[in-house]
Each structure stands twice: as C-alpha cells, then as structure tokens.
Image 1: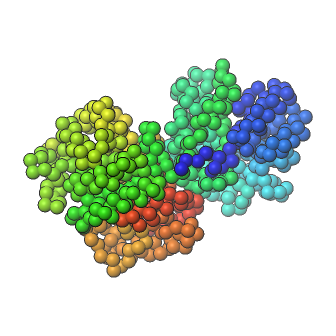
Image 2: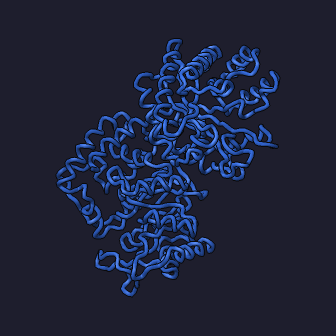
Image 3: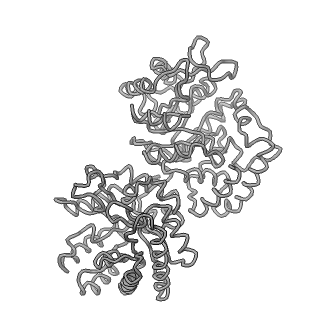
Length: 627
C-alpha cells in the first residue's frame, strides 16, 4: 500500500527560499512564516540569520506555538562577510570560524535542532590543503557546539565549479572529509541536496553511495545549468519541471527511492527531508510551494517503484516463473503448486510477474494463463521474445535443451509472430512489458533499430505497453536509447555476481528500471543450502558458487549474517534481497519461485530496509569472495 511521504520523515522547507519577500519587512516575514506553519505538510522550518532583531523573539514563539521544529543555516553569515571557512589565510579562516560560532549561539538561542554551514572556494591543485583547513574548522565548530549542548553540526554539499564553486563538492572528496571528522565527533553529519548533484556532474548513485553513512539531512531541489546566460542559471532552485531545468518528478522519485534504500527514509522515520524551492521571475511563491508538495507526494512508495518512465507501478520484488517451466533446467514442475505460488504472490503485494516463451517451451506462459484467470488486472505482466524452438524455425543457434534446438531470432516479422503466440498462451489481449530475451547474433542478425520498429508498432496496436531488453552491453543499451525508450533492463546480478554494476548505475542515472535476475544465486543465498544439498537441474549446475571449491566459502559468509538477520526479524535470504534492492536507485529484484512458501518468504523482504551501515557490512562480507 502506498504511503504519504510524511510516513517516512519529517518534512521541512527553507523559509527564505520559498518566500524571498519575507526579508522585506517584519510583517512580510511573519506572514510568510505563518503560511508555512499552518500548512500541515511541514513539520520543520529551516531558517537562518533573521533579517530583523525583533524576529529573534517572535519567530521561535510562532514555531513553538505551531508545534513545529526548526533548523539554523549559517550560510548567509559567510556570504554576507565574504568569508571562507576553508581559507588557507589563517586570519580569514579564524574570522570565519568565529562568525559561525556566533551562528551556533543564535541556533541555541532560538531552539534550533541543527546548525548548517558550507565549504567555500578553493584553488585547483590545492584541494588537499583546503580540505585540511576545512577539517580543522569543522572539528572546532563541532567541539564548540558540543560544549554548549547536543546541537548537530551539518555541512551541506554544494556545487564544485558552477555557481558557489565550493570545495565540497565531489562525493569522494566529501567522503575523505567525513572520514576525518566523524570518528572524533558524533554531532557531525553531511547534508545532500539533489539540486546540487547535476551541478557536480554525478549520478544519484555516484553522489550518494560513498557518503551514505554520513548523511544526516536531505534537501529536495532543482537546478538550471543548460544555459549560462539564463537568469535562473546556477543555484537558484527553480520548481521541479521548470523549462530547461535538470530535475523533473522522475528524477526526484529516483532520488527519494535511493534515500529510502539507504535507510535515510524509513517507515515512521524522523529524519528531516526539506524542500528548497524558489519562485523564479514572474512566478507566484504560493504556487511554487504547492508544486513542490505535489511532486513529492507518492514519490516514496511502500514496496513499489515506477517501471522506467512509464506510469505503471510495480512491486520492487518481482515473481520469476522460469522454474515453473520445469524441464532440464529445473526438473519436473507441479502445476497446482505453481498456480498457488502466483496467487500467493499477488496476496503478498507482489504485482510484477516475469515469464518467457522459452521457459518450459511455452509451459510457463500457459501456467500463468490459468493462474491469472480473473486476476489479469491485478498484475503487471512481462514476457520476452527472441528465442524460438519450432522444428521449422530459423535463427542463430542459442542452445539445445529438452530435446529441441533453441534459436535466436529478433527479425521484426518473427517478433510480431512470437508476440501473437505469447498472447494466446497467456490468455490475454496485451503484454505490459516485452523484453528481448537474448540479443541478436549472426548469422541471423537483426539491427536494434529494426527490432524497435516492431516494438513501437506493437505499442501502437495496443498489444504491448512498454519494452526493454535482457543480457546486453552498455553500448547496446545506448543503441536502444538512440532508437527508442526502453523501460527495463534485466541482467544477472547478485551479492556474488557484480559484472553488470556499471550498467545498473547507468540505468539509475537514466531512469531505467534495472531488474536483477538470480539475486539468490538460484537458491544458494537463501541460507537453506548446506554442503550435502544436491544440485538438481542445469540452471543450478551452471552456478559456480555451488561447486565444492566455492560453496563452503559462501556458506561461511551466510552464517555470519544470521545475527544481523535476527536483528531485522527476517531470514538471511531476506537480507540478501534487501541488499540487492539497495544496490541501485532503480533496482528491481526478480525472485524465482514455484512453491507458495518460497514467494511467501521472499515477499517478506519488501519490508526490510537496511541501514547504510548494515548494507555496507553485507557488502564487505561478500567482497573477499569476489577476488
């Protein structure tokens, strides 16, 4: 079930940015602040140095009366005096430190729960010297704040070379900085703003992953950097969807899903998530605030994600039906158990189901037709094209299995014929997502441009709603993008199989769903396999982690996860699925099952959200096995 974003955090807003006119007079400030305080959307007011002395008495009273909280930004203190907190000029650095200490005093005086500041300019080639100066200033500020109480001191990451031209900056430099400060001061943290990520030139994944354990505050904003002559160019925080800007609602959704995956946003969470939006020339401030509220609504869903850039909502865990096809790959299939498995998946909130004609040579699709009778509208159904096995079929040889030769054929005419056969086997009039199963190879090679022409024709005919691809390279994906708009890429990916990490990161940047198949290494990572477990079927036999050399190492790693699993009240397999969900901003996890109890257990992972620290701990446990 979808939840409002306030179920995951305390929602805040930067007052002076939302209503720039508030600095005109005391009355303007009071009126602007009151609009936000009476709005039940917001629980936190982000303010800075107040423009009029009388406000230091009235503003805290208003905030307290409305049962809201507030934070204090020291940015304007440095801007007003043109001071650099990381200056190599010791006199200037000392003046900046003392100025921010005065800001910390103000923060305590107004009852703020956090003090914020930023790094300033630097000279290229001397970044490490400026970083040392910043570390010295930060530790002094943290010590000063701690001497007076428990006020957290938070540094906001800004752009590096466009507008503010701040030292921090790039995520790897931020990581180095945080690693130096955090061990000594527990009242320190990092603030990340999604408006600054495009300005730094990083993807969401690149900006968040290195510093996720240090993030203590998050801003939502937009930026305009496509035209340096435009009046909104730089750090002016236009509304989401502003013409020519970088961040639309899809970007915001990906960013917030990433915040949820790293544990910053969690069910019942109290971390602060604030809007930093500003009306541009000729815009109405009230409407810009309304825009922000609407854009954030529904961006964080319980267990669901957008399918690419479509309007379809899919569960973040999908049901894979390869094993239901049985045969040489998996051994005999039980129709009754398979149908029960599909029904249990739907009951547990898993609405995304994946199949393929090649699974059991049509059997998996036929089973789904029976399982989904009367329930077709309850799911998003994906199937594939490109593998055929008829005695008269033409195509490049893929493999031999179950007494037939499987061939690859992605010729447009063949794609259309394959879709018609799938529609008949599935007993439906449309397929929600059609994937190319394996990419075309000689001698029956078909260019991607021609494949996608067939896909687009099928969309026009209403026979498919979207398309994507499996088992491809980054270069091939970019070619798909040149001729169309793929919604999902499906690749083998798990805690122990990382060869497609770069592709997953690219998909996150592009807003394409990345679906990981075999995330549990075909049962090995469930925690239920031991050294005596027999390997049945070619699908498991092809997994090298099952062999005598590797299996003991894997089982030892899983044993180390049992205590953590207990703390999350889940199974080891659930931890592995949750780790996989957190490995990419657009990650979807395809979990195969053909027994109700299997999908029952897998579905429990929907509610497991790992902390950044625990995600890294699992990651670190697996890395030695990847060497």
